[in-house]
Length: 166
Image (cartoon, rainbow, N blue to C red; front, side, top):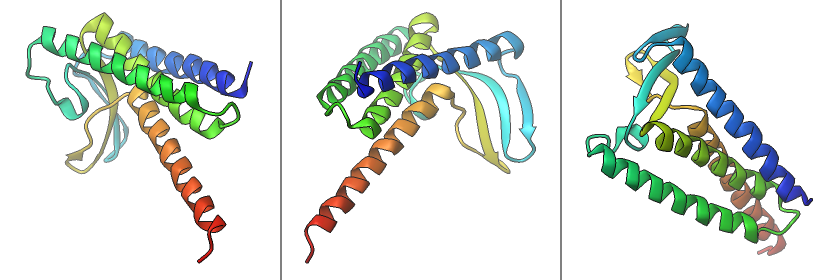
């Protein structure tokens, strides 16, 4: 098994397990709408649902439309990301990790959408009265994966600049 494949399998297993377990615990121990202060003035655990996209976009549309929309777009994104992962050289571990994190996050939220028609969110960060929209582990995996890929691109750019002195 290549390193790239091992990274994918471990990331999917750990990422999906953390995402689904955390959502299961929220559903089991917190009623919908509950809020549990963790760090006063900065972080709460909450139990909320999101039928829409990031920041609640598209949440006001019909449940059938949003379900079909997110099922098809997430499937398309997963196919594109999987294609890029598949095209990576076998030893490109940082990029493999970035793409694997994105796939794990997308699959985690897709599982919610297929099962429930909405996504379970529970991480609520804020400063005073300014709240970042609640999110979950899957969302964090997607952002982390994108961050890893940005880092890889920037690092490659620096290597390229160093190899072509002015």
